[in-house]
Length: 468
Image 1 (tube, rainbow, N blue to C red):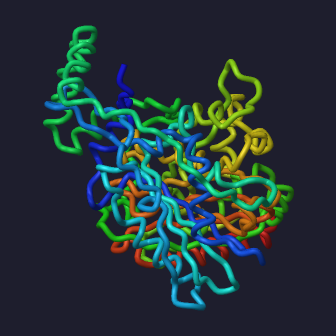
Image 2 (cartoon, rainbow, N blue to C red):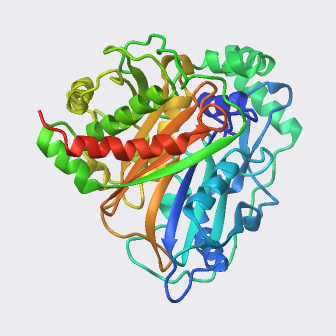
Image 3 (cartoon, rainbow, N blue to C red):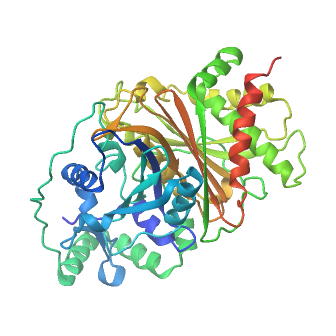
């Protein structure tokens, strides 16, 4: 049987256009060891790990006449050097220059005729640092059969990458006749599906997105809040093709101290810091706020399968990501009350008994946050953008150093995709005592994303100094 895209994966291809590329990204910053960390070493490292990720050497092939969903086929012309690229900043490169490059890279769609991922090895950063910027299409990472590349190239101990010898042999690509025969054979068993496939191909991207707004496949995503239109405002505009990116560096200990003082969870504090920042940002835009004004956040969370008590592999975690809607109280001027409101809103989800605590996620081998952020984006992409204003993903990472070869990972910033009418997406990852925010914004609607980043720091400081 052909390896056919799921309905959800196919929908990501249908809705994609120049303004809304459907890939998830990451910015990993490494400290170059004395022995060096070169582009050639990265190629060896990635090449050696691709055996665990067969999807990364496959491309999508359309079925003639759209009689069935597209299929995954081996890329007989796979070229690792095409997918792992080399770039450099003018030395000494600043973080601002790096993030400007990240924004430009993320605004470009992945080539649809090739395997749907890219990685950029960026040299020239000040302090003898290098960066790895990854882009992976949402149709690739499902958490069941395929995890994110960044999860596999990192190890808990340093080790020099061994020279890589590619002995992979691709399977022959099916002919157009074979694709049609397979589709007809499946159509005999499920005749209604053929009609739906042709109809989806004939409709425009918006219709395809609407068709799948209530259908969540691939990941076990569940909407836990009453579905109603999200409040209007500057966060919900038709996005352009340009992007801006900003980052925030904070310490995990600060979030834990705030949690100890006021209750709730670290994730509640993260959302409260974002809420305070969005409040100040809206005020800077001269938006009118009342005590009841809210911004609705889509917050994907890992959940526990009812039949699974413990997790031991990324696949088990990846198959359960629930999308929750949380109304962030941006109209509330008191920082502690904002935190309390968020804590109450999240308590219902936590009380369900299915939410996975951070310590449970950290039992997952490798660097799970990259995969969990990808799964969160899948959950968001399967829902109508009319029901939320901003996506905020938060995934705990290991609290010990991780290495790519002998290079120590210093920082990791997620880059979440924008939906068609969402001007800002925020990804958060904790790692080795730090909490790292990645803010991806539309270049026109969220040109001042740096301002939002600074306001997150100020909001956190406000929470640290807050008293009843």
